[in-house]
Amino acid sequence: MSFFSSRDAVTTHLCPHCGAALHIARTCHEVYMRCPDCGKRFPLSEYIERADEAMERFLESVYLDRI
Ligand SMILES: [Zn+2]
Image (cartoon, rainbow, N blue to C red; front, side, top):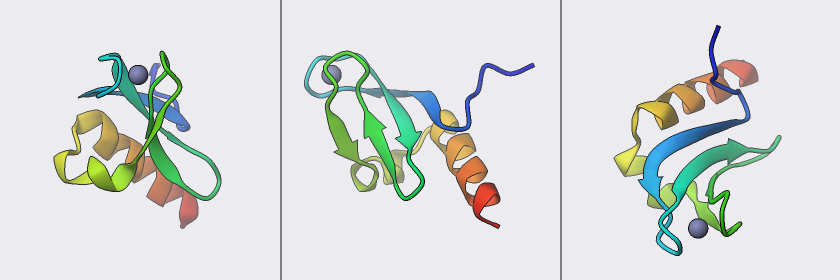
């Protein structure tokens, strides 16, 4: 049993706008960071070099789905 969702996961990065924990999320065509509190979106490219465990697991699942 895992709380991990294939479409949205909480990361350890904080929203630069309001300080809430950012989520990594995806649509069919893109992956991005989003803030659940203020609703802002941030490009994954700004965070990918500092990817935490949640992000790595999320991205693994994205790539698996595409195979
Ligand atoms: Zn925010």
